[in-house]
Length: 161
Image 1 (cartoon, rainbow, N blue to C red):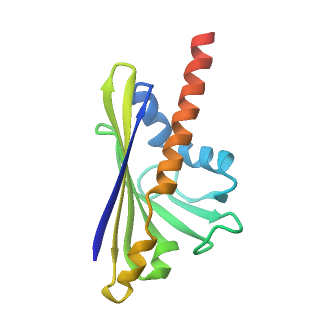
Image 2 (tube, one colour):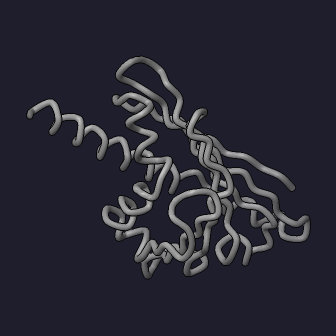
């Protein structure tokens, strides 16, 4: 069984500025720093931020579900501003999923605005199809909101100087 969830959020910064955050390791650092209630740790275990990079994410105590997971950067397209990661260990794979992919796409809207489009794609074995109901876009939406606030703060700080 295959499924997909999407979330879009307008950002009040140019697409190039948003991509600087989402296209590299910066978003992982920001998540680890600003969302301690969701993630206890975000560790770089392999790579330098390019394709093949592996991050180990450990959930905070009390977060329901598996304790954490490893994700691998499987696609980074700097021209189209698309980044894809797939869970390669733990997380949803422990619940019978054969694929759990997050795609982040920064879309240029105007000179000073862009959209972060987040897509969660998953595939789950038929015998575990009931687990598809566990998939939610909420963590990705929370990260997008965090990024928006961070980018807005940085923009305000730059304009003040």
